[in-house]
Length: 233
Image 1 (cartoon, one colour):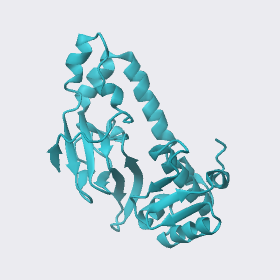
Image 2 (cartoon, helix red, strand yellow; image 1 turned 30 degrees about the vertical axis):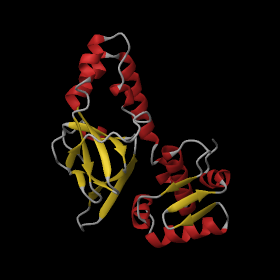
Image 3 (cartoon, helix red, strand yellow; image 1 turned 180 degrees about the vertical axis):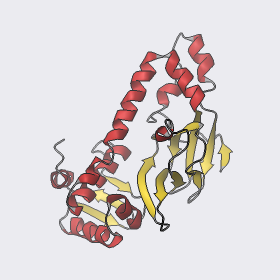
Image 4 (cartoon, helix red, strand yellow; image 1 turned 30 degrees about the horizontal axis):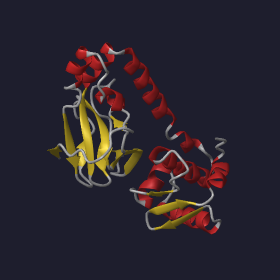
């Protein structure tokens, strides 16, 4: 992992954007914010940002790219715990234990901003609006992956695709996305085999709910996917 100061990607959609924005008329805020982000790092594809049991010292905001988090069982199999994209934050689960719980590995070349935890706490203590904002971020995180309890494989994959759509775009002006993860990773996360994931993609395509070409997915009938997943909004 190497440091970088590349700022070609927009920060405005990042969950930590309020921590990196100057509050007009507040010199105290300006003095603190200069040390909020310690540095940026480039994480190459398949390279780890951190490993389980590494001492927790920082949170990480993804500036560009994507990562997966996972642990390894006794047989050496990956158990994927989540996928993270630009604007999202990793490391909250390590606060209580003092060590990172999972491995975080880049799915593509990824730029992350490192926010030392002591700086993060100092900013929270200095501004009540940031306290509310971070509670909102944590609340959002708690809802991700709730679809893993769905009974059918069709429901899980449909809800997973809708979740990615909302997190990566959030509006119906952009009706396509690139899947950075493999079919194997998707199946691992959803509790399905890679073969089942491929079969369901073909089924969704035949039903004209999506079109798919390698990793590129275009949503043709988003409402039908929502209906399949039992999502009402």
